[in-house]
Length: 268
Ligand SMILES: CC[C@H](C)CCC(=O)Nc1ccc(S(N)(=O)=O)cc1
Ligand SMILES: [Zn+2]
Image 1: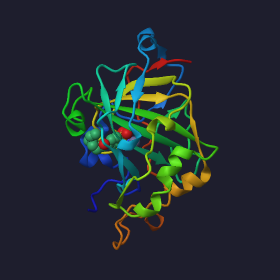
Image 2 (image 1 turned 45 degrees about the horizontal axis):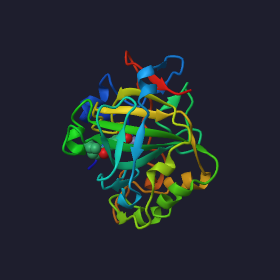
Image 3 (image 1 turned 180 degrees about the horizontal axis):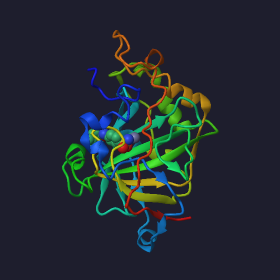
């Protein structure tokens, strides 16, 4: 529908609050990470972040119209420790990028953008029955964010990129035959910043504990170009968005004020 949110002038981030009032809230994401504001926290250091993923549980990849998303079977996965109470399970992972590699990440660090940002979305399985329910509670979700910078080809992400031609249009989805290991897309050093925020797309629920790794991971220009080849409209329909022939060339939300929220860090 025309009212469908997106990333163009007509339906982009500055229009979202019209249909999704939470988007104008005080606990929104992404934010600029002002590293001088970050406080190191001994309680974070004492509970190392730990995760377990089951590569065989990656099920399908879909073109949501706002990007690609790999849906996984949450069973067998877990994320614990750091700022988290209880156990979180992996639900899906996806990415945000820009029309050129000088921008595209959602979080920025001391005002610097990266070429893209990978999000691993988890829900609190200690307290809630599923992701949808968890999304309605302040401690319901946790997203691991990985900053992507231009460099070497990323072999694990290449497994996603190989599937992009079969989900070129909105709504198309395909089975993920070759197991993709989300753990292999994480940086070597596990230092991170953490703060309380939101989903970065509508309905922008303020239910996310953000954990953003400090160390960027490399991805090649060709891989970023593949992301931008996705289309935001359905096959057979004309392009509703006024983006150049409906290519999803940019799908990141500009940063929102951190306000009075605490920004903590773990590791140097
Ligand atoms: C999990 C229940 C959820 C309502 C189902 C739909 C969903 O997953 N939305 C979603 C998840 C993560 C982000 S982000 N970009 O990582 O902040 C944005 C939107
Ligand atoms: Zn995201």
